[in-house]
Image (cartoon, rainbow, N blue to C red; front, side, top):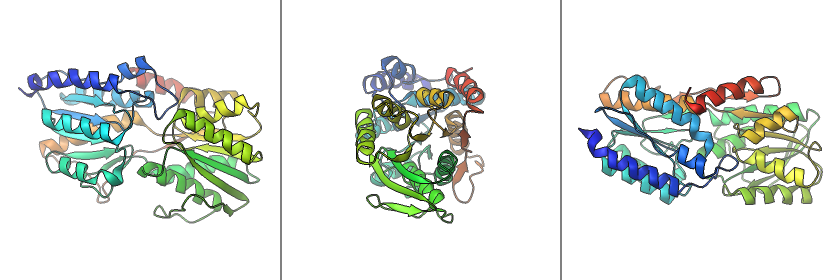
Length: 352
């Protein structure tokens, strides 16, 4: 059966994921984190589906638990593959999966605008969906994830809570190539400036944006490098010591902001708002050094991705909306709900 052919692939994927692991989104993973989130397969002779992340990071562990639970519930085999953050590595892993005969792939594209040919070649052979971050120009069947523009506006609302009288704001993110980064940033900007809802709007970085009492001074890009992320924060407060709020759009950004401000003895002198649930971010919320964060639901990304791929492979009605967007709600986490959220998150990451 297919499983016998796939077992060598599972072992090689596990080795590849461990060897290639490097943290680029979530505040730093170590070797044990990478090994724990490398690759896994269910048991049995049914179809095999793969979920491919964009980077190697502990944030994805809840997603891994989600695909494992779906594998058990559906009686299918699952693979969990974490590239090292480079588009070339993600491409190589996707091609490996194709060569081994998986029946469906759910992917968070590393560089969607330049991966259309790759994604279309996959979609021509097997069901392909995107999760976490979209590639709307590709032939993927649907996208599963939060509305990143809406989530960006939720993040902007947290900034408004943190500095209700307005002030200077700095935004930090890996790049503006990924669909989720573009939409999150624009959502923050539009919310702060009091604009109407328009997810297709795009303000090019490099210009100070003003409105509603807020000044968005800069968008600093760090290429998902933790050292550069911290250096960007240092550069920002040296150039603009009166920044009122630092906003991180990826999981590792808030920990980098915290580290940089702590080193400069500036913790508490400016507000911090972020995305995702890095341990340092949640600890910062409890300590009062982070106002709040917008979180996704990676467990549900994993579970719904495998469920969707299985329906598509079996020729069943997958219930894909006309807009090809399966929405998973984002949440705002503050001091009043952080402990409850952290308990639930740890259960999902551990597979309980």
